[in-house]
Image (cartoon, rainbow, N blue to C red; front, side, top):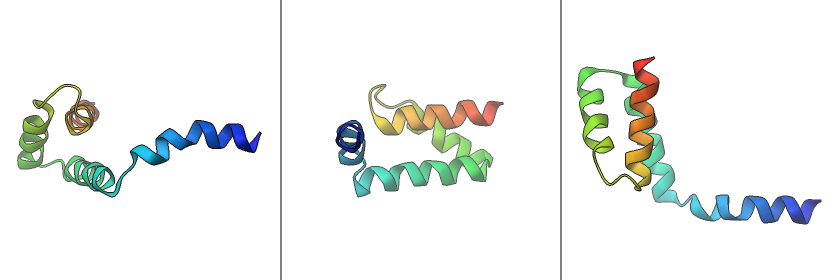
Length: 67
């Protein structure tokens, strides 16, 4: 069971580099601020490459702010 859980989690832990974690935290901070400037920056970031993590996360932040 432990080996199976480690196999499942291995790709997730490898994908979370310090740089990616920093990007996600920065986007969370912008989302929590919720100011007009923060929203504009999130919109700029969301307009990036559709496959990019930063673009996807920024778009998700904007969707959460819209609710």
